[in-house]
Amino acid sequence: MATTMAWQATRFGTLPGRRTGLGRSRKVPRGRKAVVPRAEGLVQKLNAEELEVAISERDRPLVIDFFATWCGPCLLLSNELEKVAEELGDGVRIVKVDTDEENEIASQLQIQGLPTMVFVSTDSNKPALRTEGLLPAETIKEIILNEL
Image (cartoon, rainbow, N blue to C red; front, side, top):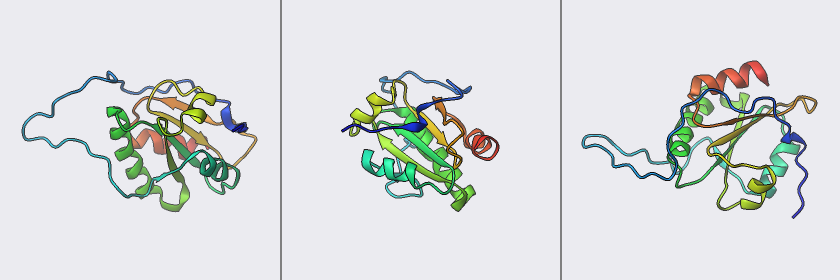
């Protein structure tokens, strides 16, 4: 499937964020709960075709989270994105794409580090912004409100 992603251009390579070792398993200390992704929420999971439609028909800023289910920082980021979606409501659309299920588009977009977020403005003349790593909800909101 040949897809054209006009929004591949990026303005930021990486924003300051915390990185943790990928692929390492960690035990949850007693008395603490493991981070579990929410089954349903405000962040929609899309496949490659649905993502193309979301990009082409966007009428508000779009945040795309490229993640994997085995990635610890990705699970933490999903909670941060839920917070942002709750706070900004209809002012932004936040979606996620599982890179293991949609490996062709992940390869085309050269998604190598997880989590990777792409921020797409409603203005098609503005380049998309791309970040890698875990960002707090406040930083994500600042990017959406000030850069898109």
